Image 1: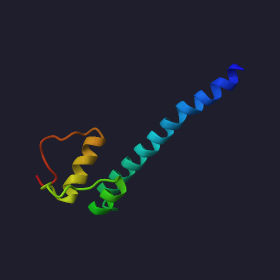
Image 2: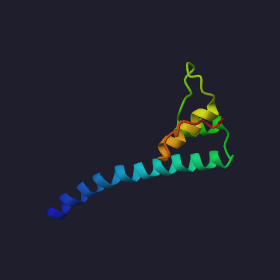
Image 3: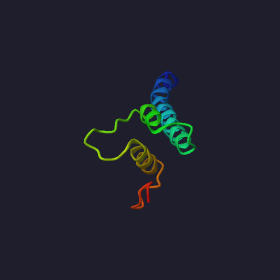
Image 4: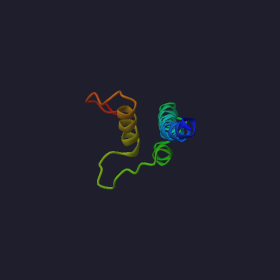
Length: 83
């Protein structure tokens, strides 16, 4: 009886972890391909599901660069891609 209760619980806990790792892989893959110039900034934005807000003064390539830096743990060292 306990086995029947543990199986659904285990599957419930496992599913979000699998989704998180899949999303994490997609972001890391997209950032790596963007850095390797396999994607344009517009393609990377679309693949990441991001929109560069119209009020933002950052160009698309800078927006993607900063997003990838923060997501990958590099943070922003105060400089920009153009420095």
